[in-house]
Amino acid sequence: MNFIKIFLNWSGRYIEKNTSKQEIKNLIKKMKPIAIDKKLIRIGDNNDGGYILPDDFDRIKHCFSAGVGNLIKFEEDLFKRNKIKSFLCDYNNLSFLKKKNYFNFTKKKISSFSNISNISLNKWINSKISLKNEFILKIDIEGSEFDSLLNISDDILKKVRILVVEFHSLRDLRNKSFYRIFDNVISRLLHFFYIVHLHPNNAGKIVKINNYEFPDLLEITFYKKNRVNKKGKFKNSYPLDIDQKNLKEKKDIYLPSYWTRDNL
Image 1 (cartoon, one colour):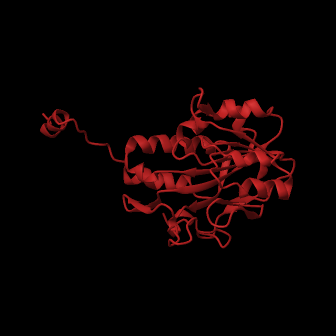
Image 2 (image 1 turned 180 degrees about the vertical axis):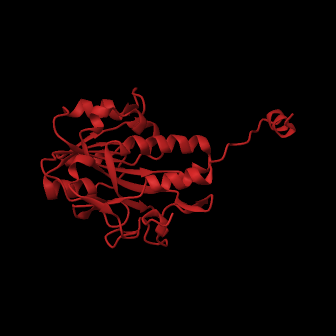
Image 3 (image 1 turned 120 degrees about the vertical axis):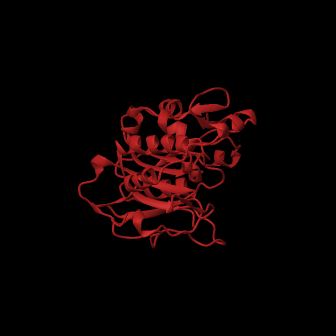
């Protein structure tokens, strides 16, 4: 009889099942970026609000930005540079956007379901455009990205050319249940996309999980597989020269070489 479990049950506590070292190793291998035949460029604000994307915007007319706050230079740059109009969704009241006729704003929280204050990615995107042309999807929704990305339809993912996601609370990958959710999200996205860029957000920290360093906040750029004519091994280290710290006053976060090289 396991007296530890009996005591924990009696006291209303429980033991979390931990993620193994091999599982973390396999996840990092899965997330290693590839080198592509397109130039990577930075779009958006200096420091927080800017993202690295492949320079491939031909026939892209729309961007969907889930979670924006007051940082809209990314969307403004897309319009000024490529005449890409953005649909924005945020639960905060961003009244200043009414002055910009190339933005369409929905005041709701992105979720896995829809009601008076929530909307799913599926309902939001399908209510704005027909899925004839490819578009950009940017997601920064403070932890709701996991269930939202597991619920987004295949039909929509097939029309996303560039996907940028900020993943939150990755320190919880120590927990086996959270690991399975995140691993499922990454595995699903890799069916449609290659990972072409990683950027640790220095608003978070590096945490050690089974002796592997993992950023708590991580921005990932995914690129549609059929847009890549030639791929290769990524030979650089992160951050890139074109990356910028999210918080100027804090030290930058550097990913260990095993995130991009073969020494894992």
